[in-house]
Length: 112
Image (tube, rainbow, N blue to C red):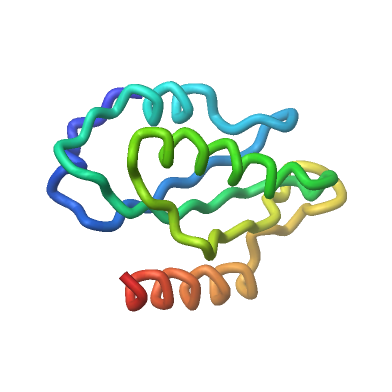
C-alpha cells in the first residue's frame, strides 16, 4: 500500500479498515508499521465489521498500539460501524450510520 500523499503535511489523519476474519487490512498494518514521519501526528481510527464479539475494539487496540509505538497519538473516540457483507448486518452502512460518522468526523476535527 504505497501512498503518494505526504502525511507530514497534515496534523490529523483518519485511518480506517474493514475487518476480515478478525484482522485489519494487512497492507494497512504494514504501511502503518513502516511510515516514518518527521514529527508525531494525531490519528483518528474507524473500522467496519460484521459485529462478531469484541473484534472491533480489538482492531482499534492493534492499530493504536502500532501508531503509539511510533510516537503518534490516537484519539480516544474511534468510530465503529457495521459493514453488511453477511446476512446479520446486510444493509450497513445505512443512512443512520452515515449521519453518525458525520457527527463523529466533525467532533473529532473540532477537538484537535
